[in-house]
Length: 144
Image (cartoon, rainbow, N blue to C red; front, side):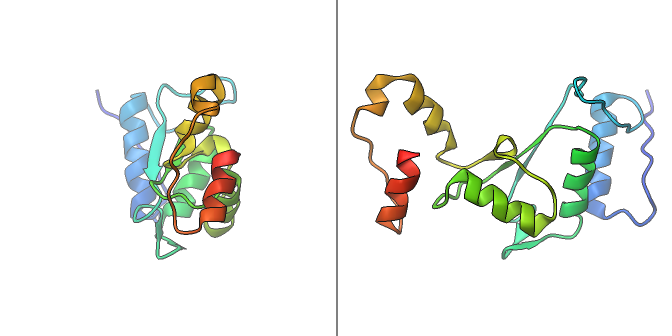
């Protein structure tokens, strides 16, 4: 079954590749997905080297995320970095990329541990080794 992808001639290559993938996954023309009726797929992007290079957006990254946001296509941003609370990192990325982001769009290396620690008393009340360059910042992040 052939899929059609409608893009602007000047669309950056990054956006073009994402649109092609959407068309393939959805098996129809790229379209707007209304709130409450998300598509059957989502995107996950690594931040460093995929969306940003040396803290600056890679060409097409901002446009691609804006397209996904505007069309209610779910996406998350991933990084193995830490050192900042998720809310801090999301605010910074929103500013750099020029796209509205929330903590629901974002996963850092330590993010999954928040849920684990909240669910079980064994982790929450136990001893956990946290490492990092700035001890006070590590402690602050671990306690939130």
